[in-house]
Image (cartoon, rainbow, N blue to C red; front, side, top):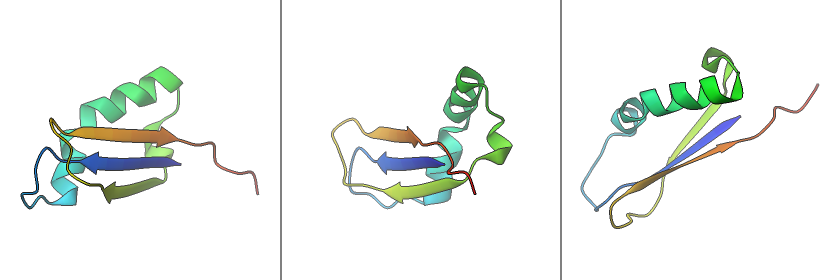
Amino acid sequence: MVSITFHPPDARRRDIDNMLASIKSGLDGISDAVGVDDSSWEISISKGKPEHGGKVVVRLTEKAAP
């Protein structure tokens, strides 16, 4: 499971799908680093409070076995 929280640099309106697109290369890099094909990821996306400079928090958790 991949949980992504976007903290924009200000309070302007932003589309969550555009925020996700903006970090595509970063997610590809994480996928390469951990050796897991990102097409198998379950993704949770949320928008957090604005933070000066903005930031993205990505949390990876192992999927529970059935």
